[in-house]
Length: 199
Image 1 (cartoon, rainbow, N blue to C red):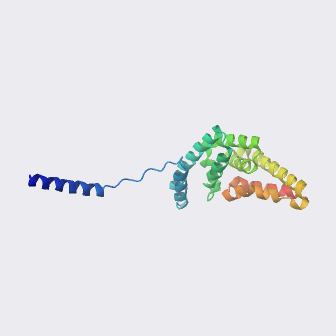
Image 2: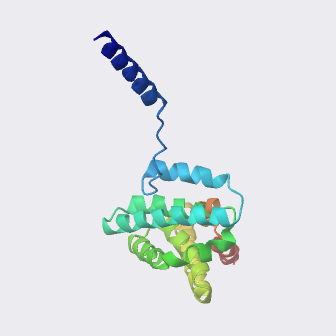
Image 3: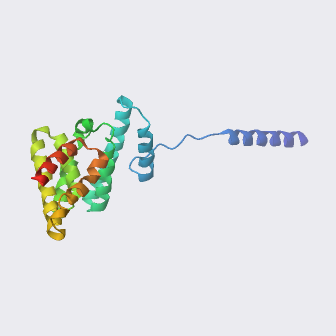
């Protein structure tokens, strides 16, 4: 009997040790989840420009676009605005590549533009137009002309409310989200709009 008890104790001790030594791999990131996506974006910033970064960014962008589609379907405009700026910021270090990076998602960007045009929300409307200027090079002048039109409207409105000295204050303010994203198309638009405002 004592021999059996000793064996059982030994087996239990060995089993307990084995359990304590067992490790589990980290759960894979679910990029549709906000916290996981933020973690993946933090990792993206430390990657050098190149193929590995492009692949990581493409996965994040696809997840953001999926969330954007959900937000549009559920009429959650504020969520769509937030996700749009998160998407554009992925290209802040190499904005000249946003046209190829988002080429597969152009339909969603067009839907966003239509949504923001209907609602009259200016900053995301400008951001989507800047993106479309890169995604549709043949129509870039049309998209940037629309940006100029929006900025002239905000400029005239500001001047009407606060006097001529307030001119160009609103266009600068409305372009701030795009300038933080460093969207390549918006830089072209900025120079064009400045010429229009000063004319």
